[in-house]
Amino acid sequence: MISYSPFWQTIKEKNVTTYTLIKKYNISNSTLCRMRRNKPMTTTKIDDFCKILNCKVENIIEYIAEEKKEP
Image 1 (cartoon, one colour):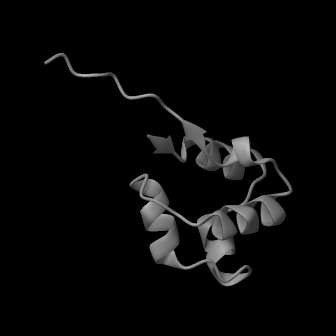
Image 2 (cartoon, rainbow, N blue to C red):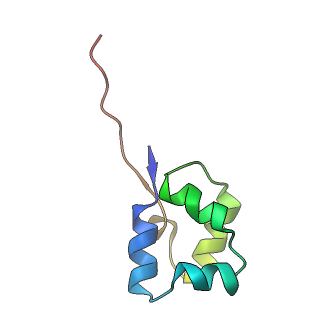
C-alpha cells in the first residue's frame, strides 16, 4: 500500500499549509483529499509536490507492505 504520511510531515516541517498549496500552487482540494485517504495519484502530481516542497519522493510517499492473509 502506498501511504502519503511522509507528505503531511514534510509540509509541517516546511511550514506549508494546505491553504497555500491550494491558493498559491493551484493544487486541488480533491488531490489533497485523495492523499488523506491514500488513494492513487499520478507520478506527475508527485513530481509537482517534489518541486513545490523542494524534496525527494520519499518525503511524499512510502510503501507499506500489506500482511498476507492465511488461506
